[in-house]
Amino acid sequence: MNIAENKKQNNISEYIIYMYQTEDLIRVYEFDIELIKQYVIKHFPVSEEEKAEMAEWYLEIMAQMKKEEIHEKGHLSTVQKYVEHLSRMMDDLKTSNEEFKKIYDNAAPYIKESLEIAQGQITDEVQICLNGIYGLLLARMNGREVPQELMPGINSFGDVLSYLSFKYKQKNFLSDN
Image (cartoon, rainbow, N blue to C red; front, side):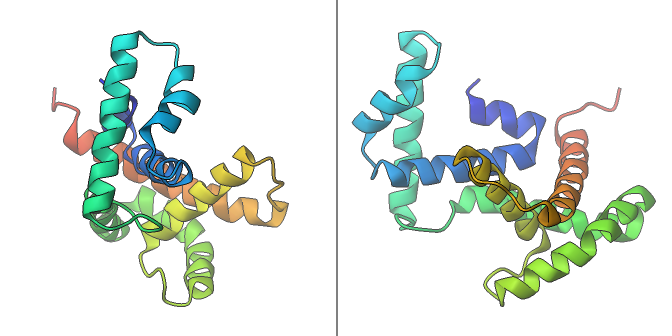
């Protein structure tokens, strides 16, 4: 099972962010599989056969991105379907689950503020949470400091996504036994 499939089964939010990172990586290397092999795949401590499988996986993602014409920005429709699924799940949980309602209520002011900052470019609350966590990841990867005043909001986004991911896994991958 490749990294993405493992994340999809164990933490759907991590999967979505991993795929966003993959899309950005492909863009940085200008859809050049040879560069991805040289600077990314080569460094994985796996067999040559597994490296070949990874290269094939990257080629499949590249083909999807080209087909969907998201060369410069945007996300794969297959990935965004999971965002939509989590959004529907969140809407249900906000009214049916007291534990989630507390988590959501803590995040709601930060979500609202982020939606206002997005000025209509992003209207989905789950997407706002994902973007906040992905932004934190990118900042840390680039060695940038994240202002401390942003951390309570980012942490609350993480709490929302963690709960949604747990419920998603519970619903889709865990048996009733």
